[in-house]
Every structure is written in structure tokens, then in C-alpha cells.
Image (cartoon, rainbow, N blue to C red; front, side, top):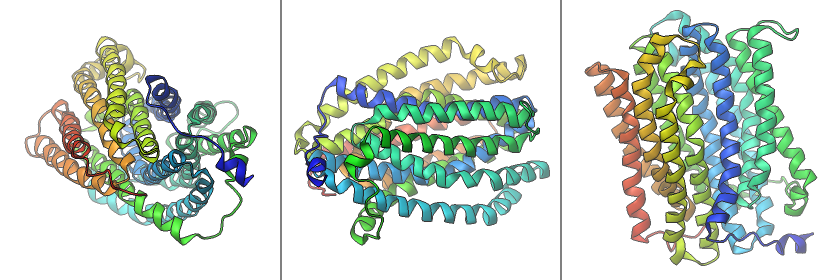
Length: 452
């Protein structure tokens, strides 16, 4: 079996077809969780504008911990892609098994932190007592889905890093169907289930994440991927691999935590403008997440393909690859921009909040659609930096961009008390600040000697 693993050829080719073969299944796999968020919010919007508003704050708080797993996933994806490009396929299982140990420890820490920190944070930042109680009770339930989510993300990293991204779709599809059915059953009290209201969304999401993880686990076993890569052979502690994963992934974890924490800061500022603006901003987060899936899929493709071709010794073709990925990413983003600006009213009607809500939200959609186009370029270059292996540069770029983002949002929303349309323009500030240093770092060629 060791020989069979070593003989697997997982090297990628620098073609549009290869890019799309990797990116499109990833887009679907990213799209499905966003559909889950939107489904939750559509059902919650039927309970009232207050529930829809609080859902934005709890969703972002949970994401702060969820992106720790995403950072671990990205770091693992880069490492696995590099080993695949170098032909060292037999080393992938050691990385994966140590990743599981790390993820479980992080998830336990996140649960403990949520129980002690969430009430304090919300009591000092939210203005309404019922918002504080609602958000805290929801998170006490929702956070228990984190271990399942981390295990799910690690398996996705293996599939993407080894060019098996097409198998991502089954897990995410199972997760979405489960989430929709349980949202309907638990939030509204249908199909013989008790009516649980706001907290029903938390329970349905946990179960859906478990179903998604189980589906991917069984899929990888059925297709022989787990056996070929020997993923479950040795769970003993391996200090060298653990250190490598933490060195590679910890800057990304911190980067994503900082990024999402800034969103929580943004939503707290929006909450000061009232429930209507908070509810509108929550729908914008859903729209941004839904239509940003394509750009994020090309970003993930940039990470794994750049790492893979560097492993092949093709450093001189990295810029060529990035430009190919960026061109495809921008092309899809331009189509999304047109769709959003033509059908904005229709998209907003699914939240069932009335004409006044839609009228107030449409200008924000205009700004969000422009930010999505800018993001389609920035994420590709930023994740190319991740693929080179120098994740500390990613963290440095993030710190600068987030600082500018938070300063802009605070001045515009809190000090000048301007409409939230101007507040959402902070996304354009953020993605511009991400693009410029990422582009110049790749252009500099300083990454060429980096070993991981």
C-alpha cells in the first residue's frame, strides 16, 4: 500500500480546464453553507425583523471560531498541495491525522470561551437587553457544532489538495437538504416537531454539519481515497508535523479571526443605527456570501495550484497561473455584478420584509456588487501568497487592511453617522488594501526560496 500511495500522480496542469475542474466543485461546496445561512435567515425573518437582526450578530460571532478551522484548512491545503506536487503523497496522511488532533483541541477551547466570553461581549456592546439574551442563548447551542465543522473542513482540505474537489459536492448537498428540512421543522414547529423559534436554527445547523461530515467521510471511504492515502493508519502524536501545521496555519487562523472579528465590530456599529439597518446588513452578508462563493473557489484554487506547481519546480510559471485564475474569477464576478443590479428587488423579496425594506436595501446592494468584483481579483492574489507558503505575509497584509477597514467604518458610521450604504463601502477599502501588497509581493519574487 505504501508503494501504491507513492505512485499516485497528483500534479496539476496550468490550463483553464484544470482550473475550472478544481474551482467549480469548490464553488458548489462553498455555496451550500451560504444557502444554509440564507435558509436560516429566511425562516427567521418570518419571526420578525428583530430575530433577523440578531441572527446577523450571532452568525458573525460563530464565524469567528469557524474561520479558525478555515485557516487550518487553508494551511493544510497548501501543505497537501505541495506534497502532491513534489510527489511525496505518502506524507499526506501524517499531516491529516495531526490536523485532526489540533482541530479537536481548538474546538474544545472555542466552546469554553463562548460560554464565558459571549455574555460579557454582548452585554457591553449591544444596546437592547432582549438582543443580549437572544444572542447568548442561541450561541450556547450553536457552538457545539464546531467540532463537526472542523472535521468536515479538514476532509475538504484533503479533497482539494489532492485534486478530488468534485467529491465535495455530495457532502454539502446533504448538509443543505438537512438544514432546510430541519429549519422548517424546528423553527416553525412542523412535521411533528416542537416549535423552537430562534434556537431551532441553531439545532438544525448542528445536525446539518454532522450530516455533511458523515457524508464526506463515507464518500472518501467508498471511493477508496482514505485507503489510498492511508488517512487513518496512525493517530499518534508527531511533533514535527504538528509544528509544521501550526507554523503554516496559525497566521491564517489569526488572519481570518481578525477579519471576522472586524465584521462583528461592523455589525455592532450597525446595531447602533437601529433594527432596520441591522436587518438590511444581515441580508447583505447573505448576498455577499452567496455570490462571493465563486471568487472564494478561485481563491482556494489559487492556493492549492500555486503550491502544487511550486512543488513541481515551476516557480517561473506562477504569475502565468495566477493571471489565468484571476481572469476566470473576474469574468464570473462581472456576470454576478450584472445579475445583482438587474434583479436586486427580486432577491430581497425572499426575506418578506416589505417595500420599505427593499427600497432602503437596494442602494446597499449596488455597493456590495461592486465590492464583489474587487474581491474577485484580491482573493486570487492573496491566496497565491498563501500557496507560496509564506503565511506570515498574509497576516501582515490582513492587519493593515483590517486597520484601515475599522477606522473607515468607525468614522463613517459612528462619528459621522452616515447611511449604511457608505458604511458598506468599507468592503471596497478592505479589498483594495488586500490586493496591492499581495500583488507586489508576488511580483517581487521573494517567495521563491520558501520551503514548507
